[in-house]
Amino acid sequence: MKQALSWVLSRKAQRAYAAFWLGVFLLLQAMVVFPALHALIHSDAADSNHNCAVTLFTHGQVHGADAAVPVLRPEPAALFIQSPREAGFVSTDVRLLPGRGPPFFPSLPS
Image (tube, rainbow, N blue to C red; front, top):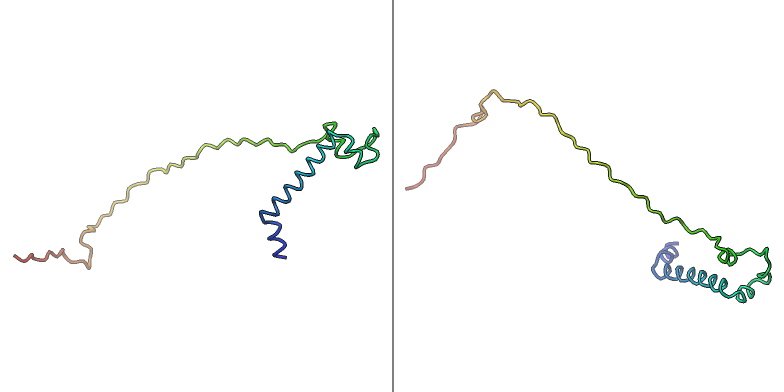
């Protein structure tokens, strides 16, 4: 199963798939241009009630996919401004907390 899946997803398989459908499309176009080629495939190709992909192409009754791209406008950025908070002042001296000794300055050798 894994090997089959890897084959489907491989580049060569994708190219072969695209080439096959391009060939089918070009064959249909050739049948539109050359009615004798269409008559080789269908014996009733000249009949007015005959319906197939070639007659749809001939009469322009093929609807392609809509290629309109939706244009999305970016929404304006929302700015969140915080209200200024009250400043919290500490009433103790944080330079010399309990359990902390005075600064130590070693004497420099002279």
